[in-house]
Length: 143
Ligand code: DAT
Ligand code: MG
Image: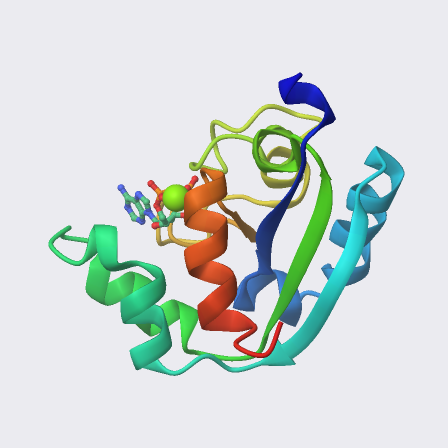
């Protein structure tokens, strides 16, 4: 009965997507897919928040550049809801590298390499329900 279990995912329209005016386009795709918006806020994340959000990548060579980029301007943080929306949004988002992401996906249609490889890739989506719960506590502590 797994498919009757509603779940939530944490989506971010990253600073590149926000600055390019793509928040509405990302929300449009989420809503057309049939997922429900639960919460939404615009904020410039602190490095402390990003250290928690990207804790799994703290030792990666790209971590410093990732935090610099993610703290460079406003993001739109969104909680979405719907059966299997965690893998469903990952599918909408496409592959991490926007150069390789398939056409039809958010990253494939709206993203590209602007000189920083995979760093600027328009959106974030939780990779598991457990990650979603952990991330929602960072971005929506009152939810
Ligand atoms: P995803 O966002 O698809 O879940 P991830 O969790 O592996 O990807 O990495 C988190 C973010 O870090 C990703 O959205 C962009 C950045 N990133 C990942 N791999 C990278 C790389 N090799 N070089 C530069 N940035 C990278
Ligand atoms: Mg990830």
